[in-house]
Length: 164
Image (cartoon, rainbow, N blue to C red):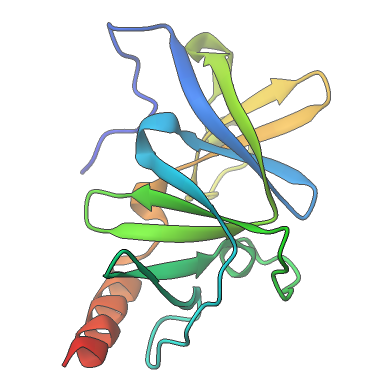
């Protein structure tokens, strides 16, 4: 079993987070997990991929799956326009791009202000922590559970079909 990405570290009591917006709600990822932010580009369909996969992009010769977090979070679907962004992230298994409405920047959050999600919202598996800010909540997303094992398998199979 993996440890929480927010497990306290001896190095710093502060976490650096990339904050982004989807449908007016703020989410965040650990800065170390984010490789870059790109403007939205054309996404090619990926047959046989899990429903959460929007398609793929080609980034410097590398085929990268694009996840639609709206689908994962059960939010209304949309056509991502030119103002949308792609967060290119690295999980322990692969590089992914996450389609988001807007990237709001990097924010430092004291670790002691982070609440475990099961204390507030039991069963919300994709969230590693919740921070209460003066203007609302910030959900810290856990990339390692972004895809289920079955979705990982189906995505790998779909990518291998494209490369064959």
